[in-house]
Image (cartoon, rainbow, N blue to C red; front, side, top):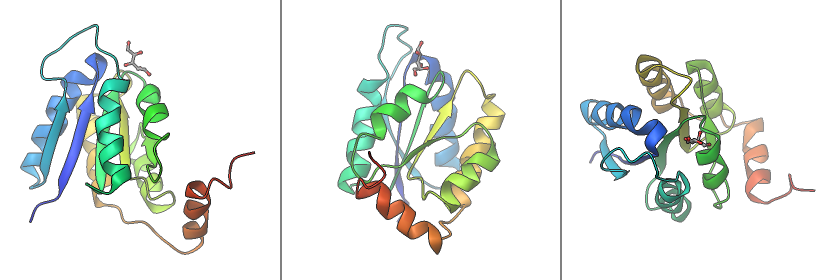
Length: 150
Ligand code: RB5
């Protein structure tokens, strides 16, 4: 069975999201597009981060992909949900390290700072890289345990 991956964007990430959904389908995944369905310059990124983050947080899906202009707003929202580790990745190297060291389960792409082709390369790297485990396990556990907070 193919893996369901939730995908969301705001207006700044809309065009890239369309490419991401098509690419995930091409690769044999089952992308679930949480919207927007059409370009709406007045839409708000938290409305699309929420369904993706909720589904990952609850364990309904293992992974999600979000995109907005900088990636930052989407990451702020997604990282408020327990067990969500959303990583803004602007290069394949960042995506690789986000998987290997941080076990990032949500990829966030900064649509205004990467080309669509770069976005595809980043997506591929994030999809194909495994968590390294080892010393990184306790660090990831400390995120979810809240021990990194003051
Ligand atoms: C929308 O203009 C922009 O603020 C949004 O896409 C994102 O970059 C927010 O973090």
